Image 1: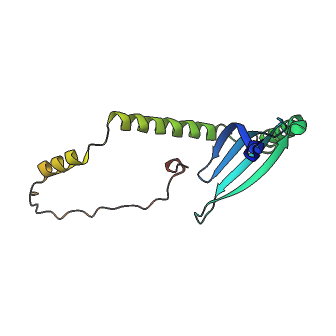
Image 2: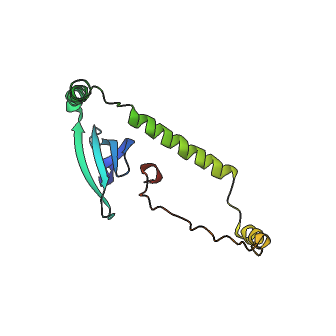
Image 3: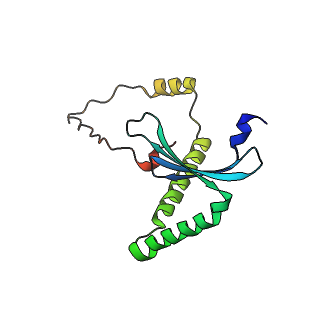
Length: 154
């Protein structure tokens, strides 16, 4: 068998967690036609030069104990340590962000960007001498804001 077959991914899912972190869950097949899971946390570096990756390999004999312990740990945090926290907040934000992206994509599809020749012609048609005003123009204020989590795509 080919050496690449050793790490062949047969299933994959991804969870975006904020603007810098993504979790990948991959089912991989071994040469012996066995399966295991890799969980990868990928974090964008602060300096912007690539990503840091941390992997966990989970084998079939540990699936049930791992899942049970993970559920117990999460439930402990949710019920004992932070019972008043709104854990669905992040799911709602993600859903709103995905809906916004879909609406923007639909808007872009329905209103395509005009071709360059159309832009030039319309710009020439709109070019006129502005009427002089006795009032001075107010300065335009711009505010440099950091990129919002929703503005960043991976």
